[in-house]
Length: 489
Ligand code: ADP
Image (cartoon, rainbow, N blue to C red; front, side):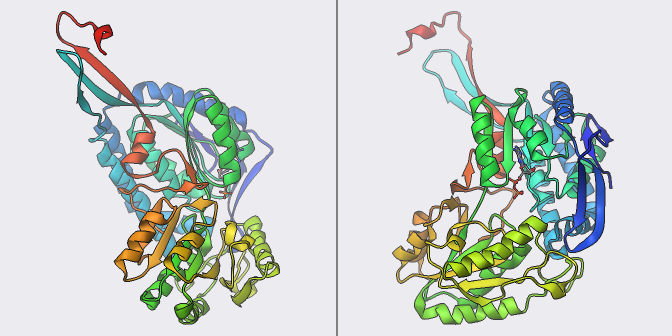
């Protein structure tokens, strides 16, 4: 595995006192990599390299750019297990989840490879005689991509692939906790034939590397996934200099369970959404809103499933939940157990460290009942395996409890009643809505993103994700000897 940063086609270890230490959160004595972090000056060099490479890359035909993505997908497929294995070791997610994420990244590469044939504008009629008018989509220039640790392979792919196929060059800053998966991706693009300088990766602290990306005048667009604190601040800074921004931030996603629901199916979905990836997904299910008549039966099913979870090192195929990603997240998870109980929530399962699971940041899957909207555990994103259960008496009340948070990423309802389902689809304030499905997941061809405090800017993935990395140019072509545009009303 390559380590360090990557600028103008070359891997290097920056001259810096700060060390990036990549450790396995399920096996704390395993150091995966250790190397000097990049600085603001390294970031400037990456931006210069990207500006230089843009000149030729932006002129490369889009289908040809797409073919490089396709080759990257093929290489990634041939290295599938290596990518998945590294992801489990550096992020902690179980190997089955890592394999799923690797496959998803490959799907996204394939989808955007095809988009190279379809970067489209519109032809529209003009008011002026003998005039042809249309729009074309052009790349933006150098774009900055800032990604979190929870999907260390798929999120970088779903930003880098559309940026590249649209003809931009990239300065990419992965999370410092997960540089390994990011490095494999860069290595794969290099092997696929991406020209030097088109994709540069700078591994270093957000306060230096991220900040320089956000404030450098040559960076024309920023795509960020991470916390609301960082996203909100960088949105303001980038907006002041007129850069385009998309931010995908927190979630506090609810599943509604109505009395006519298939309770076993609902329990399976809620369980997967709450405890999959140790709850470290922006689409995780962190709240359940259930009707009183089915609450006991649902809770019994949820507790039984939670009891069957085996916490531990995700490389062991029998383990079903990995650790928190680092000490900070581990402490956050444990703090929220106290916060919830002090606010009056009733602990019905789990709660606390899982010390038997090994030498890692292991916490038990946890379920709280009697959670009300005034409690912090109802309102705040924990990013851990903690599920809160609330009660509602009617569909209107359930939707209003579902909406009573600042976030709006995803949601789900379990019911057989089409009227209730459609009322939910229209009334719920989230960017994605599921019916009789978990809150999690996304597909390459479907727009991904949220409303309210969750997101600003364009949706990611799909054609919308590509559009973000382009700008529209409106073209007017007159083919008569006499055109006076000033005469148009
Ligand atoms: P999380 O830790 O949950 O991934 P963060 O918002 O802290 O969420 O980090 C997301 C990404 O933003 C990471 O790559 C991080 O290094 C980066 N980042 C942190 N601070 C800044 C900043 N001031 N400017 C730009 N990027 C930053």
